[in-house]
Length: 280
Image (cartoon, rainbow, N blue to C red):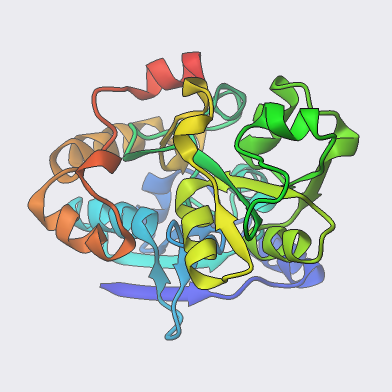
């Protein structure tokens, strides 16, 4: 497989690249016909999607997406690491052809991009200072304690916190998990909301924080993960979904993602993107 990982560029460089690439931008099928690589955008999120020490795109969402593309016969792929908040805008601006990194299929996102069928399900959790001094397990606990929640900009936890009654003043939005961990450790936030995969990874890596019980949160915070596409790439997405149906849950896939803690309980079950867009 031909694979190249591109580093995130500065603002000026990104603008220059976007301008020079404009002639190549368009439906995925046009890029394939022109011999151009398929461009994956993802954010550096532990377990979900990240570059390893060799610069290769890792994480179970990248493994699954690249595995599906390979099954489709597409092995000319390059990937770019960007801020979480830049994934959907980058896709819409034709800087990427698909985006990974653990995007939950949410109604608010379905209004802007198209999603593959689900490839995983995941609950959320909080990281809190070791010992959980304020006894935080839920958003209502944060609200009652008038505490501060750190959340990644563009994360579903921002929507969830507001739905549970937290005000903007109680939500500290930061770029990603590194900044969320730093905010909790420095005492600038009392908890940080993220996927359970991220929270468990951070708690296992740093004794200064603990992870809360994801089952303490409401059922509606359970979410399903998909791969994001432009609305104009519907034909390619349909083919992607056909390959996905055969690949997700297969022995080959389960072996590829076992290293990330993805188990049978992580499989998406019977939920569809249509249902998830309507109910999340």
